[in-house]
Image 1 (cartoon, one colour):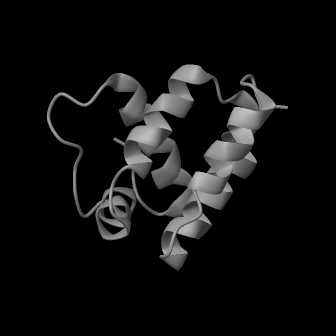
Image 2 (cartoon, rainbow, N blue to C red):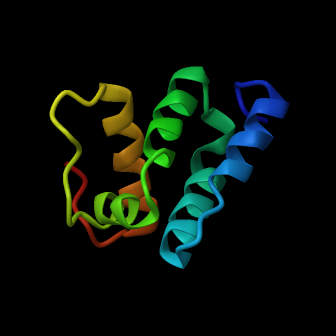
Length: 93
């Protein structure tokens, strides 16, 4: 069970459903591996990433793009997990 409110967790999982299959697969793997440990800080960081368009999000997950300068450390941590789960051959920076 996640460390966050179950209703908020369900909303976050629903919001994570994307139109791009690659994002869906990466986010699904992320929730399978890290969902139980999500807290409010991680959820906020994931929401920050979910605000991006599908193509921009996939560019970050696939390593084709980097986070904007000044992104909070929590966002970097969530992105590192997404990269590991959605693209295991990429090095995690």
